[in-house]
Length: 134
Image (tube, rainbow, N blue to C red; front, side, top):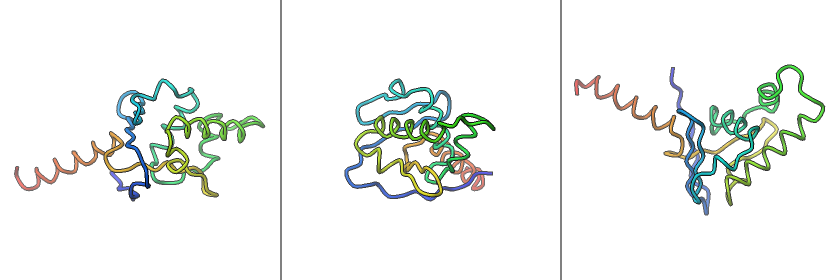
């Protein structure tokens, strides 16, 4: 079942980002391809956040994905370091796009920035066209 996400409006001064989840993970910023700049753990973090874009992802879920049932004593610090790194790679609006709350980490993804969302929209349009007999 496909679920719709609530999509925020564009933050002031925002530069367009482009995220790819279909196929290899990709990130493009205003300066071009940024995926090579990401550390391996930051890539994993980005993928986890994109799977639940515009929703808070709890820290314990991220830690479990990174380290399983036995996170190291330094897990919280290591995760914080990856968040800082990812914000830097996201660029000038990194802190506005990747926020921290008591509920976890939230990556703000705008319309047209995530390939999986575009695919969902194309699929929805195709189903509607089929329903109309087009």
